Image (tube, rainbow, N blue to C red; front, side, top):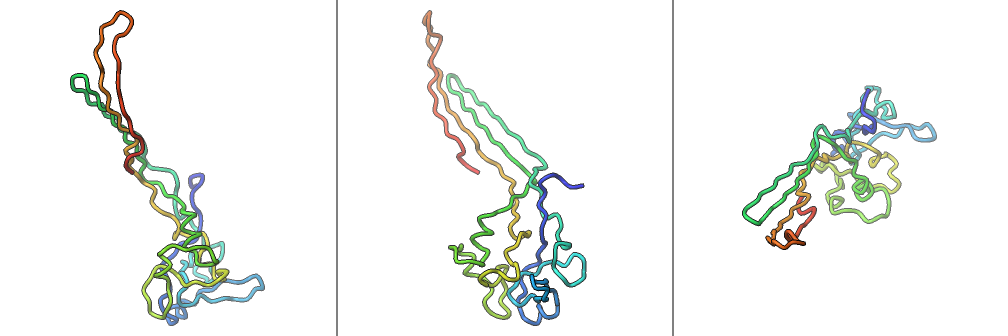
Length: 188
């Protein structure tokens, strides 16, 4: 019943800031061997949609939609004597995007370069941050596909601006010359 291409993944609610908070939540995931692994301080708080205490595929929900609610173009043409200014804006509203690069550069699960955001990652009990701790291999799946990586993709772009001057000529074989300059994708 959802749009084709809707983003389906885990919903998050920040990061466990203390060991006490993580212990009280008592949410876990089951590893490949069948052992329960409880989330700790510094791990992402994944929302347990089923209420059973285990974070698994049953907890996935629609977390975004790549299709805009509204999109289009705005054209304007201004003319004064022999001068003409054409402006084109395009826009998209209400769509989401999955930021794969952020997921790779802020996942904290490997030896790749990371962004400056990782300087604010969770490092001590009680720290208030939205960036989880770093653990090689990411055993708790903090970088899994979740709403952490879904962003608002709405935009307004100055797509094209063109200024033209019409040289009036009245020759039998030439009715005029237009000299123009244009620029594209000036501002988003």
